[in-house]
Length: 117
Image (cartoon, rainbow, N blue to C red):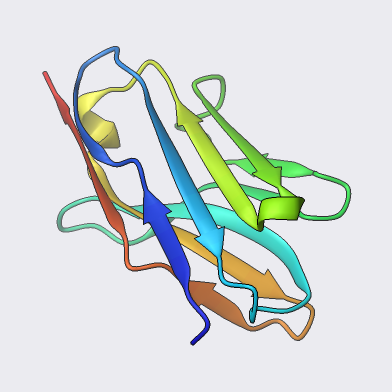
């Protein structure tokens, strides 16, 4: 079964750091883009960061620029999100995504990140 497995969420204090990981199963073929989205309580899902699997081009949401870094390991079919300088407003469920050449997007189950003030 095609799936994305996320790990690394948890509880952290303001100013702290966390690293999220997401591994795509090998039967998800021809991935061209992987990314992280988040959904704060009562709000819509929003883009956090994305990276192409080819050239490694990155895109960041305005609220995380300069604090979060996305990276990938194509050999491991894995994408990472290094989060630093965390703020209470970063509290959300974080979802991993993977899009293939046929424009189909797969989603992970989500991992909770909670930043305490």
